[in-house]
Amino acid sequence: FSCLQIERPSKDEQNAAVAAIDAEIDALRAERNVVQKKIDEAMGKQKNTPIGRERDALNKLKNRKGLMIEQKRQIRARLEIVKMKADQLIGQQKNARSTMKFTNLADIEKEIARLQRKQETSSMSLSDEKKLIKDIEALQASRRTAEELKSKQGDLDTIKDDRKVIQADLNAKDKEIDSIQKEIDAQSKILKDLVDKQSSQRG
Image 1 (cartoon, rainbow, N blue to C red):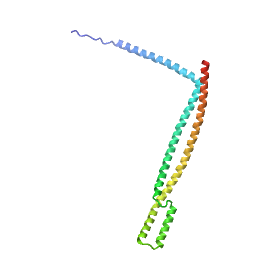
Image 2: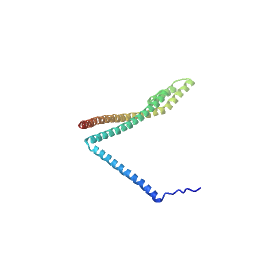
Image 3: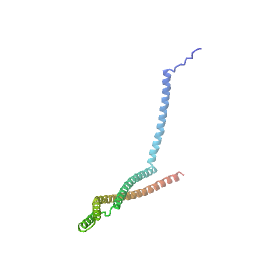
Image 4: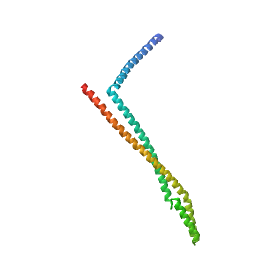
């Protein structure tokens, strides 16, 4: 059997093939650049036309509205957090009050003084006195809870004030969005009228 010898392509042929491919790629790139340049020029010319300018103005208004809507979403998120905190505090207050006979310090002190006076001045059985002492101790223990309630009420008042401020911000942002929507509607009409006018001139 005779061995078939495969000729290895010469380096020059290989280089020539690569160069041909590179030239083809460069030609395609150049063609693409020409097309892109024409597109850019057309877009540029369009921007400088009355329609292009009015469309650009409309897009700017829409972008501003989009930003305002995002700001409104952030304000609403702040409002939700404040509402959640308020609900939490109100729930804690309700739970604490349900276990207390008296919920403010002045009433607690008054009741302790009344029971102590009764203990000192009244004649009672040992079991009644024990019950009285237990009631006094429970009232003394509830002082701290009453103080916490007072503190929570202060926190709740602050949260209510914050909520009013945030709600005012939300209302103001709604007015801004309504106002810019009117501008968008007016600008859309200007653009539509220009497009219709151009179409009728062509027709």
